[in-house]
Image 1 (cartoon, helix red, strand yellow):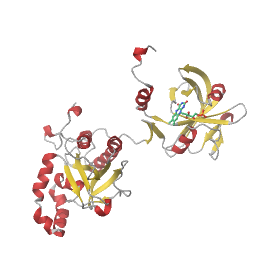
Image 2: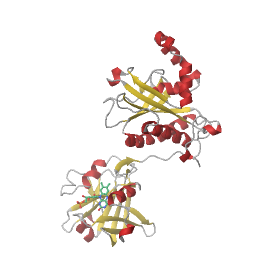
Image 3: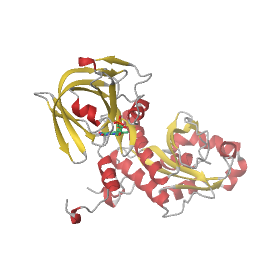
Image 4: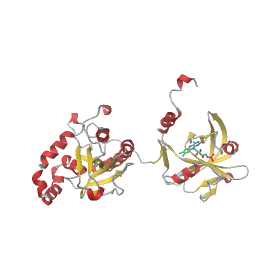
Length: 371
Ligand SMILES: Cc1cc2nc3c(=O)[nH]c(=O)nc-3n(C[C@H](O)[C@H](O)[C@H](O)COP(=O)(O)O)c2cc1C
């Protein structure tokens, strides 16, 4: 390849290729002495239905390459989502990969690994050189499916597959479906955002006891070793609670707000809740700076921000919350944290079909999200 075309290094190429998400297979075969060999491979792809052909490619440097190059048969074991350990085991060199592994012999005695999602037993019909890899074309002679969910690999990490159920808006009466969809969609977004920001993030819903965290994503500096899923928060002293108080209809939140105010009369006098909530709505975000209200949970003063996510009816369905020790969490505007949380909530709202602000809706549409 000419030098001026090679404007990327192999790390960048690997990262770009990692955007293409794949399943994970272990390809097994037998050598001339009947000894089993196997390696983890995600270069597997279907090629043809009639005749049934598949391919995969192997590094020429792999110690097991001569065995696959010379072998007549191989089995594509498509791993299930609980087989990360198997994937790791077969991605390491060494002779003992099969030790303690449940196997059974397939066609020609080639081992099938226990617990996989599917099996393709193949005869190798061609090999093609492809740079530093060899591409093997196999004819599928026997197949088996077990119904187990497949393991997924992308961006250099193991993933699990979930149906992509955010299509057209949920049908009539689908408020609950919409909320379930919102949680699924936001859960995925939260994983990516937590990786990017390296902050503790929570996903809050309005449960039957009030603001409830249904999902946490941890950071490398966890605020607590014991982040509780199902944690019910106060309305007026938590960022998540204040977000719901600001955007849910008052009749939903009023009973809890009243009882919190009744328990803490000083606060009731000091605070004009209506003004506070109006300020939150105007800024589009809850900002809690240096709160000691959770000292028993987090053993430190915390800061937090919370942004609302809306559904197609314009109702708030979720709160995205970031929380951290107040001496390190930068919740100023426009810190990367605040900017990305706002963007994430707006993108989720848009994907859930919420009407944007310029159509009378509750959330500001972002320039990059405009059709
Ligand atoms: C998710 C994943 C996918 C992989 N895909 C391939 C692949 O498609 N081809 C390949 O040659 N190596 C691939 N590898 C690396 C091999 O599994 C690894 O080099 C293995 O040690 C080779 O086995 P061997 O040492 O017995 O030859 C992959 C590793 C992982 C973790």
